[in-house]
Image 1 (cartoon, rainbow, N blue to C red):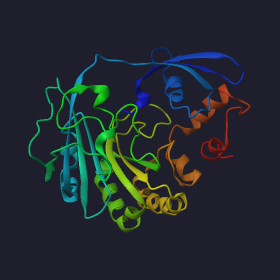
Image 2: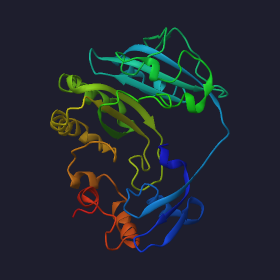
Image 3: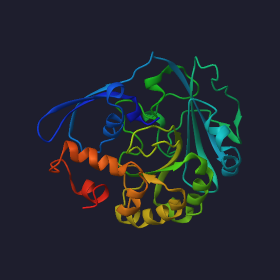
Image 4: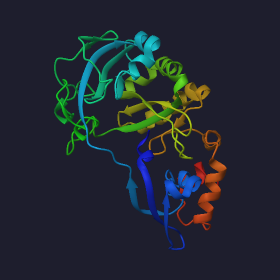
Length: 298
């Protein structure tokens, strides 16, 4: 699931100055509403996370997967390992790179081969943006390493992605994955010139009210844009229109232009979330323009 699903307890200070403790075990629906709280409930001062024993991983990269393979075999590709990411610039009906991350002790561990659904095994380390140096990236080529040095794409202490960039990301119900990918591909002539890279990946469903994955497993289509906000701002409504039939939800912390009424309609628990936030912050002390526009409709 998304990172917030690891939260088991949290402490927050409300607008009245009260310190509140919430836990998954004891607070049920209130906890589910508070974890992805968007800053509307109060100031979070402590978070407790679920942990598990450390584990080792291997990472492999494959190059140039035909988009037709994604169309025909998306589920087989995405379920082939613990984590699979598809990187594309939407040119030539092609996935530039496939990053496969496999847990070594897993009985279903990925078994590397020279070819993977039409993509060829890389002979060296790669950056998701192929023109950039792989020095910033975590070790590939099947070299074993601890989970915290394989699950991230980029090494600790190094610049992630391109560094100077803009980002957008849309969550689509997993059953519409291929349709959504093909919808974006139809926009390649508009998207590619503005883009550094797109990453496509899957995320499990959760029960967090304001999570884009609330009660639905998702595919996410992430765009790393060149730092040209006027051009990106013109393009985002075009992408959002293409993804509208699939009820796409934008990432809360990345760029989007979706009208607030449309955005609010995508969250079935929004009325409950508004009531919850008002119970903790009745005067709206922690609200800002983003929350007033997109959540409260003010």
